[in-house]
Image 1 (cartoon, helix red, strand yellow):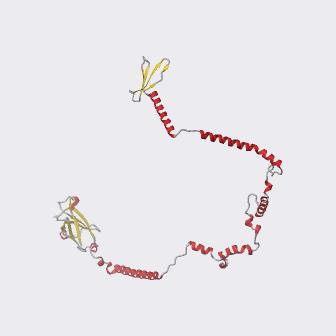
Image 2 (cartoon, rainbow, N blue to C red):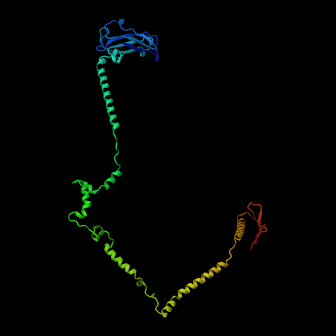
Image 3 (cartoon, helix red, strand yellow):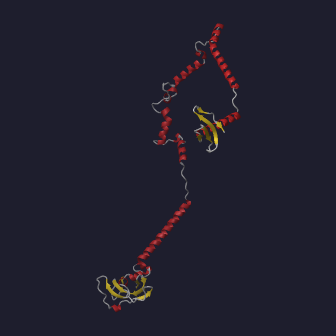
Length: 337
């Protein structure tokens, strides 16, 4: 078995060394190998810091693991100088081909290989059989929920004949109860239970409602019975005159209303509102007047204390705009410049 070592100096590969094995002891009891160190394996350089030596078991008649220390030489610091190794009797097996390692060669390995090949053959046969069956298999999709529901609702009750089945029991209840079930009598007209439950708040039956409608129709066929008292058709001229006189105040009121409406119409016709041009001109005059008032009230005012004359200036504060006089009795009419 060839063992490989690697030496470095300050972390870099170290070449040119002459390493030697300085310790070779049995791991079992720590005793030194009973052979002179000169007979121990020689370490030789490979390249790039790599070194090797060869040792085969049995070594010096020993077939057990050994402990070895290899010294790289005094040129190395102690942390990089020494290498420690374990040499075992099984190291040679790791260097041999898998197919030749005992006891697997021709033994367990061959048996495992045979089992794998047999399992593979069986799996292939199974896949072939499944594929053959699938090729002839026809799949029919089940009916949809809507189709199944329709089939149930459309199933003939006459076909429900299986004794003690749910279908026959339902058919007997639904079809046979009204006419054939013991102790029951077929119901018609107002005697039918459902019609007796259709009632309003006054609890009238359909028969009562029908009779009430007949009475109402009779009343509608005789409308003269609903004429109000005092408005009967006149039977002579005197009665007609009385009715007309009684209605005169209402007629007079209508005439007065019409007269008032006529006066209003005349007033609207006589009204002459300003045209748009006239209204626009009036608006412009008003705006000019408002602007003059603004300036007279808010612009610069200078009064001569001797003469009482005053000047109101334009917005620029220098151009005279209004002149006048202030006296003890008041202020004269302004003169617009």
